Image 1 (cartoon, rainbow, N blue to C red):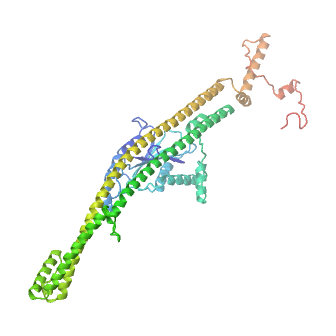
Image 2: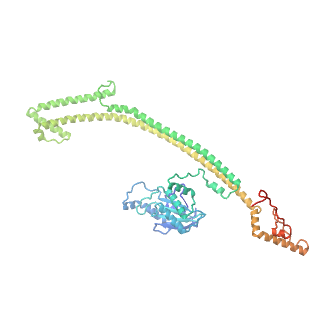
Image 3: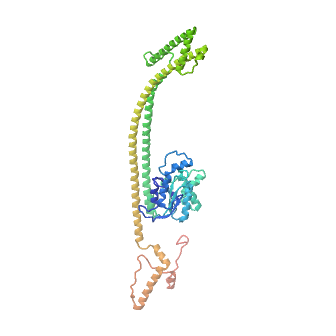
Length: 522
């Protein structure tokens, strides 16, 4: 038992109609002579030709099903809802339709797809029995897509269990692999040079030493070419990787150099005032002088206001002036201040006055911070602009490098194709040469084995006996050759009489056999 998926599609597809049309008809034809039984699972229709429309309708309704079942409609929208694979029996196996149905359903159960919409279709155009299984990956109850995680491993394990249940192991390599895995050992490695399909078709039924020697020579020559090309391609791949790494590492190093060139100036803007004044001709000194002058100016203003505030507190009208000014200042700051509490409490008036002065200091700090941020943002913008220019140049270099590497990969694929074409030509020549030899050998005179089989069956003996009787009758009637001419014996065949005939006419002589070391022994 073996399973298979499409080499190019890996068992995934976008069109239910295309998959079912291929499976339900002959290749490139509208007839269906190769189709055996058809089994539809979890579908409302009984018409195989209309099953694709029902499957597609379920895919379109997946979002509605998710909402009804309370499943979040997250993730990417499914673009390949078709899952297809084949189950292939050995040519020596001859399962009936019921067994093939049960086996296909068991395979779907092993994949967790027993509740999915599926079509099981038998084909009879190959020597071995096989079925095609086409599945809709959308769950008809929840609208979610079934997981395909490790589907190939699951099918491999299921096929191995099937062969063990049947009692006939058709894939010993697979059995050895799972036996090792079950015992916690690493599975044996497959042979590096497995027979290709061309080699298998060419050497099938050819057993002569010359053919085997020639086949071994062709295989060795191809293996040498493949090994040499693999080594060359591995070196090219290493060089491409190194070239890509150099480009990327150079890009990162250049980016770091650009940032390192701008970062000291940005740090100097935010650097706190040092104890020792900087050099007067530097930009740092100018910023420090400006900040210092602003703080000194604020200090003088606040000192004068504090002096005025204390002086007003000594007489009634100054006291009222302080209350009004503090109340207005608090309202401008957005603070909630009670005029009555300011009037009855000197401590409340002093606290409000100190709060106003602290607010002025905070505003100056914010102003200076905004000025520093503006200067730093200018430098950051220049840094980003230079980094963007460098990134554009890097993308162009990387694009050119990727195109050149892609061209090299295309050339390498053509080299593989050339080797494959040469190998196919060699095996075609081998097949033509040795198949012609076999044909000539079959068309030649009957072999000794065939003559022996004829003699052993008594047919040739009776024919020769009839010839001898005819000659005897001719001699009795005419004294010479009879009316029927005597046919000559076949070339290369000497008439041999039996021992009983030779004993009857006295010409029998016993064979003298030697000792153990001489003569023929049995």
